[in-house]
Amino acid sequence: MGDRAAARHSYRVQAPPDDALLERTLEVFQPHSAQRLTRADAREIVEDVSSFLSLLAEWDREARAGASEPPVRSEAG
Image (tube, rainbow, N blue to C red; front, top):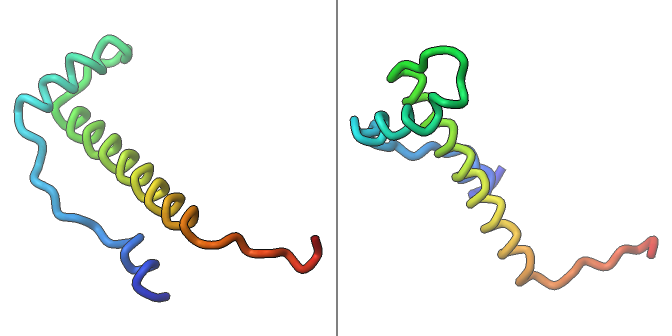
């Protein structure tokens, strides 16, 4: 699979979110939920948003790397 594929599926060990971040997450997201959100919900929200932003950063790196490579000519075109 190569280094690039291995890097894509590697996980970084991150410190758990601190109390202030969890409280702020609840403040921001609670108005948008009909159910009472818990600290576990806040932790999951933080993890999901973090994963989403990591994916966007990965796509950006790949797009920038692809922009520096010469375009591939199509045989059919």
